[in-house]
Length: 405
Image: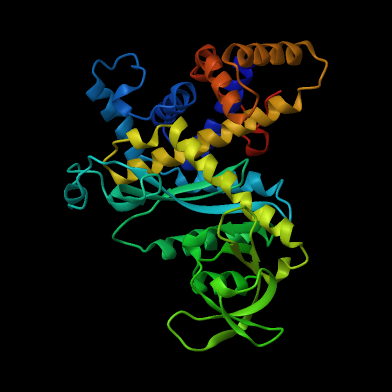
């Protein structure tokens, strides 16, 4: 019975998206086809999707899907929907990670992409830092926000029209009101920025930022000034020196933790907001390290949906395609959560489902996790197609859109 239930989840959510975004029947159908291909194959190369009846060539197919992505605007709906669902389970100490990741396109032409004429290259592409190769390459920077279980946002940086800190601030401004002060934000060393600290302090946000080893701090307890590299290990209440200035920022007090948490490694430096000082040093380090799970999730998403194979030239098409990736990943996590919820139920359908999952894992020699479930889910999608694409109106009420069983 799983294929029909998957189809109901997908249909209900796509119908809700179509209604809220004012999509036509053709637009809705094409997005469903794209979503189905993402779940089944993880492929986003428009000309390489499974051919639709009536479309004879790969070029015609790419044009059909491209026109749909060009003419819709689903990004705001997807971001709002996912944030709304996430807030239902958000706790005060949930770790939310921000990460700037990369999407490399080594053969793209930057000059063509920056020309005003449409279709000459991948729009707004630029030189970005490739974290895996530790050098600059041609591609995009992606602003990612999530937890170790949820992908909340993945948005392409528009090079040439905004700076990275500006976009980061804009994203935070849009998300923070909905979170109502809950969650502990974790940022890596690339976000060692006093303007970010002040922005978060003004809103009483809980956060942990890993510092670079190049700062001076004033200890509140003794009045001593230290370079962070010479600071004794332990917990300190500090003021930090503003970059390029001789004075310290005495309006903002911070908790600074210096700890050698790994052997043969430079001690970690964590700057924390005062409102989480009740946690122990070990607990704060543990919470910061959960951010690595967020990085892993972004890397997995890039691999699963083959983002670095996307060759979409038009910016609006790219925005909507990436929003669809986030939406499909969100629906996959919802399906997996529902399947987990019935794991210990005695119903025959639940027992048969878990027998199928266990048999799949045994054949693949894998342990159960979200990504192995995604592989299992792909085996179910072909069976789902007849349900998913049928012309049947399902319940489009948002509050019931995630019903699985």
